[in-house]
Length: 561
Ligand SMILES: [Zn+2]
Image (cartoon, rainbow, N blue to C red; front, side, top):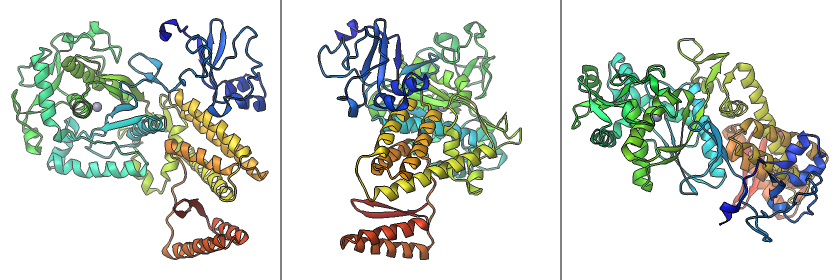
């Protein structure tokens, strides 16, 4: 009833306060109350759809609203007279399928099924691969921070053209060749603080699901066995083919085939679902028996089969909420995944397609060929703090190319250190007071800006700008002896659950650790006997040695920063 009556807004302003200040319409002090407010502009004037929860009962002073508009807090059409607010404007994501930023809405909230194409474990994953994985980590963490219950699937491609070729060249089996690279990937993942996927299906362990999918496609008449014995997908029999990559269907050559996993968009052809086993495949242990002949899966088939299997057996659905990967996967990989999956199920394969841009090294796309190849482990071996790599990546939007230079990495390292120092100062203050104060206000403004930035297609550069603004203004407030540090620590930690860019804590030498434990115990005794002066002195002495204390309900925790 309501939705039918509801007029469509002409414009939605996500954070009215920040925008008004930018335009010079109100002073920063006056705008503070509007931080986090969302204003929808309708034909007849703007309406405040949502005020930050803490400010709902603040006097409604809206100098910038036209006189004939309604400064109502409730939606005038949907909730007449009620003290309810229109739903919070939430996350909007750029969908490659529609080429638009769209409000995100999962199929069965709060669950979000997320499939991200994992590494091909023929070699070490390079930093360009990790840029994609990091953008997916940001997506996953922000979804979780926004209250969604994410189920993340990331496959491991341990059989395809490249893995077989590499195993053959190394004179070993596929399993023996790929295993060290699988371990290396997990080590690199942990180094870069990527949240592990809930499942990491391996292609070689998912062959039965792939055989079932090929069978379905053969039964539906969209796949056929070629005279070379391999099974191909007939792209002219799937009308949606080319929708994701905006392929000109007139270019499709009926019956032309391609057997290799990788080929160009300029040359769309029927692609291999199941490749007849050759001598190399059998030599490395990459061949399986199937009703349509002994062979091995094509790379594109693997992702369709593994994702459909996981969401089908766990949730009884055949549509993913989000499928993500690097831009280089749009064609042919993701185009082919859509064709295979939708031709088999008759349902949309994924509602959102998200793609991360390339990483350039010194202005050129990173590749072994250009000699600017960088692996995550190179950075780890050079002692680079993963927090600096993360911050460097967040400072460029995931849909823009990023140039990786030593200077940019060093600057990110400085930024990480500034944030770590700021948190240490806050923790030092927060242990003494829990009251309200300027820091609590700054924290509330920061959180509103932070959320508005990430809600806007994961605008991490803007979220980082808000973070450094908090550190800058917060340090000044600390200099002036402001209160509210505990609220600022809490806000900072919530942001860190998403960005995770605080310096990696250093491990303490055994002697230092023993000294710290003794100091912590002495401080505890001082606190128990209400000698707060002595307790503060010990905390100060520890801080001077770079040891940060945090008092928690389960006792005092320490870390070396
Ligand atoms: Zn894939």
